[in-house]
Structure formats: C-alpha cells, structure tokens
Length: 109
Image (tube, rainbow, N blue to C red; front, side, top):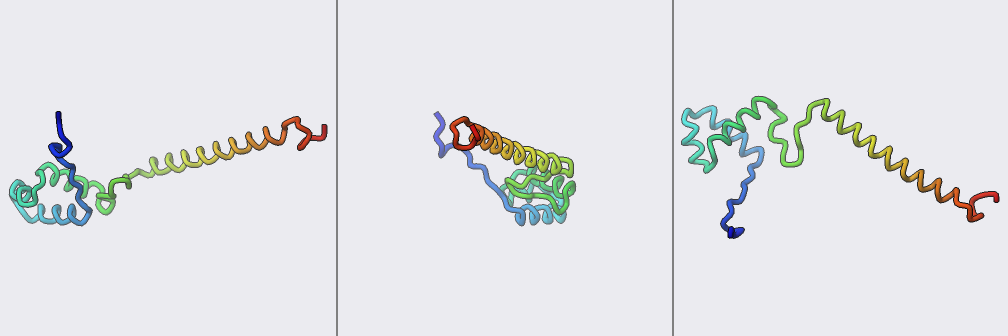
C-alpha cells in the first residue's frame, strides 16, 4: 500500500522562473545539463519554450487563468448570459406562483 509520503509531490513553478529557464535555454547548447542543474526535466524546458513561442506574452497564465481564443471567450460570455437569464426566469416563475395563489391575499376573488 502506498503511503502519502512515498508519492512524489507535483512541483509548481512561477512565471518568472519559467521565463528565466527559457532565457537560459536559448543561451545554452546542452539542455540536458541545464535541466540537471535546475532539477527539472528536459521535456519541461522544451514544453515551456514551445508555449512561450506560441503564446508570447500570454504564456504561463497560472493555474486557473486558461488561455482562451476569442471564440472561447465569446462562448463563455454567452453561457454566463444564459445562466443569468435562466436565474431571472426562475425567480419570476416563483414570483408569479406566489402572487397567483387563490388565498385571497393577492387576487380579487
């Protein structure tokens, strides 16, 4: 049975560290040696370099700040509008049912 202390803990790296590693990797020929010095995997350096090249300033947004295309942003905005409209509709349905009860308080009967 595995103990929690036996499991390898996932490390996180901040944006500044990633940018520093990318800069160092452009100035060094041996990425394997750089990775060993920094105690990270060579594949991680290559992935950070690809992401930096592909997204430039939008690279490494953080754990909860995903990079979205314009279409994805529009879809997210429309989904939020739909949720808001559904909440308003549900509130109005409840209000109508409250005011339309035949208990004599809210009707002319």
